[in-house]
Image (cartoon, rainbow over all chains, first blue to last red):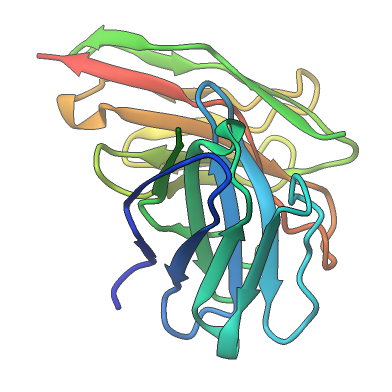
Length: 115
Length: 116
């Protein structure tokens, strides 16, 4: 596609349920990032994938969060047993080679609301 | 650790006014500095960047100068337009490059509204 695509754009779930958020990066981009933006907070780094290397998971806030990237393209961020504090906008970004090129292309995000 | 502090918003200006959005950072060495912008209904996109001290990034009439002595990267525009209404994010990446340094650290964002 022309840009980074995320789905769903909005997700409302009940506390304790699991959710999956999807990201389709720009075709050919080897680097993929997940960030989240909570109300009144800056963008918080979650996880980074680069090619076939092991992902940098250092930003994941708890073991309820996990992400995978299949075939070096589509990525899924999974949040298990959601909590109200997980409510945020989850942003995915991709770039051609990682920040060597210093330009990330962001999707429009998934607004997650945990009731 | 690394951090970015931005001017709190929201900021409301009249068209053709002068704009400054302050940004200061905390980091070791010489990080790369960025301004990203998010227009209504769109994803974040890179506005400008600077990778070394005294560099000036510029794009779409916006400018920001990397000031090592004041650890600042303030965003300026001489005459704003209604179409500049957006949320602006200051960000940095750590000095040097190796795997693990790719994380952008963002500020909280400043919402700018320009009224005709």
